[in-house]
Image 1 (spheres, one colour):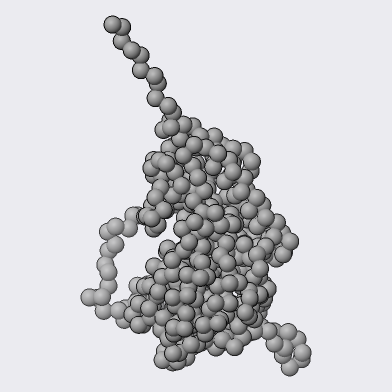
Image 2: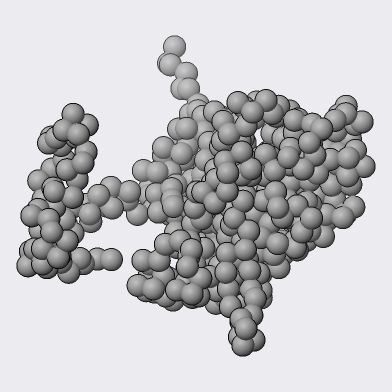
Length: 464
């Protein structure tokens, strides 16, 4: 809330009611040796006007950019109604709906969210969210190992987001789980099903399939799923929720589809916000629901036949013995999920598909404008969604710096995570970009590269 209405008189009255002299008396059971004392690094308190100015100054440090960076966090248009509703007091201040009788509104929103996510992914059940897409994938790997029991190895393609792979490694490395990296096709930018044959017949718990992958390339999900099922593996899909509006959902992939679907819900009405908070989604087949971490909200009826909502499954360490818990996930991203539910309800299936189609169209138009420039080529030939990789005959860091000087964030350099690609750049175009934005990007790129590839002037022969 923006304003806390407790006056000094209010505080004195509350202290008197509980028999305390000061607020410090409420903490007198804490030994003096354990108290932090004065916090020298904390600045003095200031008034509303000063703090408002400070926050505006901090926000302005981020600048105002024409943004073509995606790579897992996407700039989409968010209708004004989304956060106008989500920040109403009954949503904004709600916490954990332990008391169903006092939390029907929050529980219904979560139930509606779960229903929307199962529809989007074509799965049987979804939980009430996780922290983010990366930790959701980590939980999915743990879940797959619990389901399979006989194997603690998982096939993890190099086309999965590098940050996701690092997070998963951090989560599972001390549990004896081995992540085996699957290479990608250097020409098309996705996993080739035939390349998996070296793992055929071996004991792996699951194959992870990103759709779309980190390069924006569409993976051959049907073939990969069929291969995994033929070799006794579960399939864990890492999905972009916007792309699912126009691509076949993981639950309908060949050979019975994916078993677990995870991803980051940030594209569904969550602002970039300098990196968070976001939320992770997870859905699965009904037969695996008791291995799914987090919490599930169910719909029922009371003794009078009226519908009601309650927390149904909560197989986490807060609710049952730690040794029996499926996860130590301690909360869901309730406020972010509320915004995503409102966003999806406002757009509907057709609206979300329209967003996805515009993203795809913009990406193709931008790629066409950039690849006619000298020294610029598409790095992969595989079909893409709203991101694509370019290869430059120039240091990509220098190109990005020159674009930034013109107010353009040109994309994400891949030189650190994928050095084998050379001077490669991941570029994203969403529905927020107009034709003039694409033209501005291309014209600045042409000018920047033109300086590098301009022919040297002819040398004049000195007079004899």
